[in-house]
Structure formats: structure tokens, C-alpha cells
Length: 121
Image (cartoon, rainbow, N blue to C red):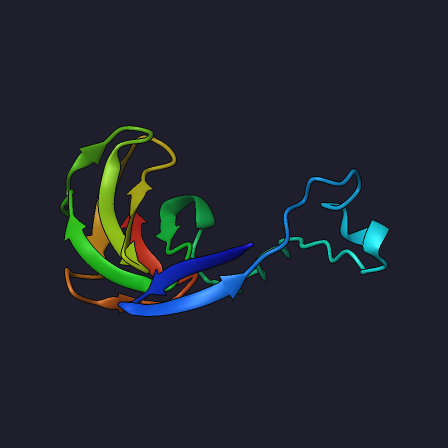
């Protein structure tokens, strides 16, 4: 079956086969190898900080906005800040109730994975 698709404003004509035969959707039935994907555990970060008193960035991104400030008492799961990565907003929440000692980033800052964002007292 021929289809016409448009990607970023450019039209393409593609040909696809219908998968109406049993086993047709199973790549191993066609002699193809199946690749399994898995997520590797994040590397441990050597730190002089008590990890219960820090919030680290889960990924590379940009600080979109702060929702808290130093000295503020926060509760577990309270929103601390929002990061933006790949046009998505990632909410960074507190893991436990605490008092914010310092916020190590500001809006517009680029952050790396495992970078410290917030320190608690």
C-alpha cells in the first residue's frame, strides 16, 4: 500500500505492507533478531553532601521556573522547580518535608544530570 506523508513540510511517498498474516508482526518469525532495550542504572555520584539533604537534576535541561525560595518550609511532594528538556516540563518535587537552605540554580540556567539543584537544612 502506498501512503503519502508530510514531515516538516516535505511530502514523501512511502510504501508499506499490510500485516494481515498471522506472525507477520513478529520480527522473529521473519528471521529478524529482536532487540530488547533496558535502562541502565544511573552511576553513583561521589559527594560530600548528605544525599537526603539535596535534590539533584534527573536529566540535562534548563531551569524554567522556581516555585520555592531559601528559608521556605516545604512538605513532601511539594513542587520546588520546573525544568525544561526537549520541549517538555519536568516537575522537581521535594522528597520529604524540610527547610530549604539554598537553591543552587536560577531560571535560565542549563543543568546537567545529577547536578545539585537544592540544599536542605
